[in-house]
Image (cartoon, rainbow over all chains, first blue to last red; front, side, top):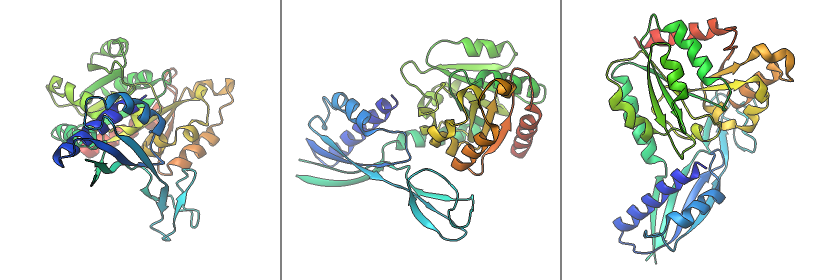
Length: 113
Length: 217
């Protein structure tokens, strides 16, 4: 349900960027979405369909690119993508793991004319 | 057809607003805790205990986030402390903008600002409001598997309070397993086991908060 607010931000941001770059009709929005966020592409699409009306994104589609959760251990330099969010170094057991990626939620690009 | 590289986070405006809120609270060295838990996990009851124990030595403000109504803020104002109610109406969480809207109501410096978020383990975790850190409340009837089902909150929360430990004899809740599940998502989590109805376990939590408040002085 919280996708409503973020989709509204998404539409506003795309509309503003399109205006800034003199794009009247945005056709495609490429969105990067980390696996370790609580946002669902389905819900974003659902709200997008009605929030986009009357904006420069009215005919746009969203393409989602999933970003895996990647951890790094500063102790032994182990680095890998993880499927399950468990934050313990599988090599040396260090608990001070850095989460390098997985919480992203950003617009990579917009396309249009 | 033009292709424009944007590379901007969608929540940028919330994060920026959260930083502004943070600056507001930093001016008065306030410790701001964003308290998150399920409906019925005992967020308000835990806050009541904390307020009772600390209000003689510290200035405390409670900001109550609820979809509708002011039941909780009325309950807390009985303790003779300042409260502010935010009604989120359609939203299932507090965000930095809703928090910013009530900042003008804050007229004096507070040592401790307790923000009770909307009862929900999912959405509130995503939105910073300008807090020092998040405090997750997990009550024993919810089950010890919740950190596995809602990993983001338990990963981000610096403090996890396991509430309603007085009910353990009647439940299939395993404290050791709960701790392992929390530590699996957040090895550095500081965990307290309490019962807001009996008062059990609050000494540790209160000591911790006093130390945190002293650090800010």
